[in-house]
Figure 1: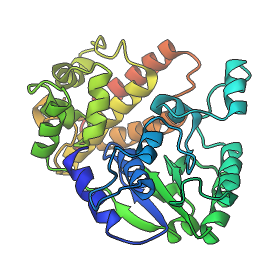
Figure 2: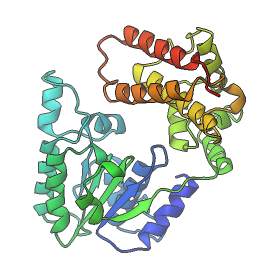
Figure 3: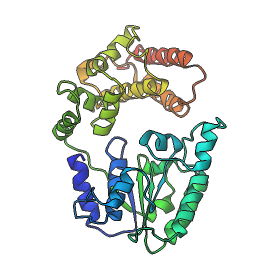
Length: 330
């Protein structure tokens, strides 16, 4: 476990509360902290530092089969993180009746409410883990709210969110809040190297992720080269999009949003977050950049379902070059 996550786990375990909301930008370890907290609550031999990792309860969590732990996630997240789906959901996917859901389905919430009524199997209470909590729709969130208001005596909740402002205010008000800690860059780079990232690449990947270490690890796993990241903005201005050609539409939109963010930051006298200042092209007009930002935000809402990825890339590149070549205002 990353040292800054371990320190936060120790802090949370020293406090009392039946429901926690772990909040902060993506890449700071919300899921890791939430699962570690749930595992410690259920552990047979927990210490102030967390779960023992050796008892039968910890083993059940590790193999994703704990009888007293209910996990509420979008099906896409369940599959990527190795959690089993319900029998009906798995059957629907196997029969190709539908695609994995990107929201937390109402059916899953109903299963969790049924779980809340059962007696603890191991006698150490029950835990419901929700991640990312902002993926609940209003129906699902309202169903959870009723259980949060009147929890069983041995029930605990841990919600982890990367966009807590999207949650119902009534849900936020019924949870104790914890904002995720940002690690120091040196600490994050050292941890990334321990996880197998080459020393020469770690600082650049961390910069590309905006200082968020788990996002940096995701970029590394996706094959991002730190040198390519520093060179593509100026290449884009010249019309060279070879660096973007192999990226998925969502990756392209995310990268362009980071570039636009940094150019707007420079315009307002702030420091760039995702690039070194020397890697940025000459900024276009502030008006054009803000219009580009709004367009990227609109595209991001539907980017997971592009009608034609090739045409989408062409359109994104055309918008980017229009903004970057716009005449800068005095």
